[in-house]
Image 1 (cartoon, rainbow, N blue to C red):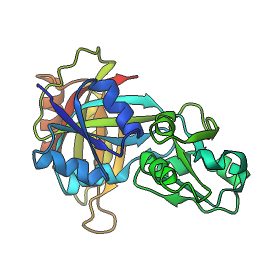
Image 2 (spheres, rainbow, N blue to C red):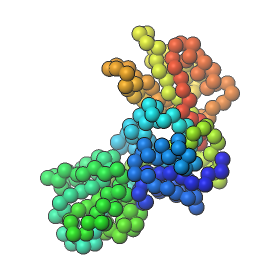
Image 3 (cartoon, rainbow, N blue to C red):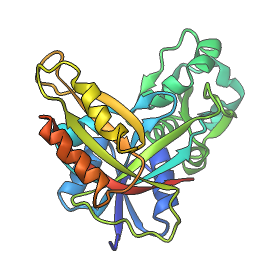
Image 4 (cartoon, helix red, strand yellow):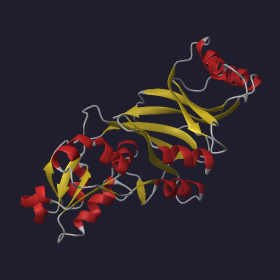
Length: 284
């Protein structure tokens, strides 16, 4: 697939922008303010693919991405990239010397949650203000030099928006990584020069109603075929309390026998199955 432009969660210098730079160097990038806007841009043909966050090692799944893909726009996952996340506290250069007296701290809700201990220990009386992205937080602080505000973002954001990092690596855990998925309207091969780390197939499975042991039966379908599952997660179907679907990651690409036969058996059991993607993943 020849990719010429990539949509991502902006503005510039977000972690998503880092993921795009790692996978698609030299391509035309177009920032969007929200995750749904990124996904809509692919659906509307504004960009070839979109890159959006889907999971963080500390905060878990980015529910907005999953729910929008399932319930609103059914795009396909054609790739995934995993990058390390390092959060820093930054202020406008005017406020470098009095950063401990900041009146407001801005960032994406996941970034705020990733830095809970630091914020609790240093700014217990400040309620952080959520923004659409870490880059948007840095941009806001840069545009208000007369106000003593801080942003939680990455070093690229500090450079992009001319901010001073006053505290490095304020995230609670060192092993902080985020998964980003590449989305397209069709299930195509992502042909990159970079060597992939591995392969995955992601399924969405609904269970047969009113059947005891249904989840056990579903998992047994994969177990006896020795298909390794790296993730299984339930999400509400939004049709009523107690109604859930399951997202399942299989640690291999779609083949001609094992996964198709597993899907056929699941459907024979009364489950609904949708293939969300079969794709390479890359670890930076």
